[in-house]
Length: 290
Image (cartoon, rainbow, N blue to C red; front, top):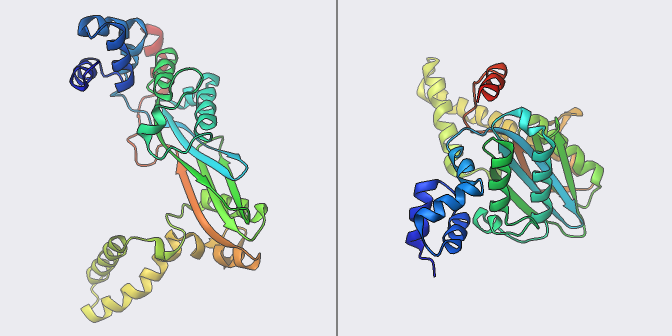
């Protein structure tokens, strides 16, 4: 029986994943030094060395099967690798593995069998083979009712992916809403979905802006109410002017087609992540000189 403390020690020494460390220790009867060598032989330690590197490129994609769909983001260090067939096959494998499951957390997802080992093992192997850090950043599995339709849209070959669910309308309408969300970056479906602390923070900022413009306190408070409505129109999908018909909102467009927006998930590759600043030619030169 391999103890958790032994797995932790090996992980700290190699940077390899928990499952890989456990497997290495099982293969070497709990001998740390032999386990380190086992990981090196399997190419896992090579992958572990890349763990601290920045991976903010990659792909965001969707996959739909019947009443079930999955949206995913997998990152690489360079856009060059994101276009690599090996990387694209990896993302496709993850999508098809996830949609057959009902996992909720990344920890659960990493243990799923892909037919080429677990997801964690596959990512480690591909990292070693491709030569860049690969990061499985996030996913969401969603299901719909029979009276609902998915709208799935992928922009720029996988830079942005959107998955919507609408009810009592057509797939075309849901697809239009997904395309709109890709272009206009809504953060929420309705204003009721915005956390109260987010609204209060926005009110505070808007009030400070008005006071800094030299407005008296009572005028500043009134101005906040007008500007907060503009904020709602910027961040709420239903309230944004519809890209195809600017004189109506997305909510009105959906309602005019008999429907209602149930949910929207939007992934943009690398959003919120630190970006690499390396010059591509310099990167290639580095690779050639290694």
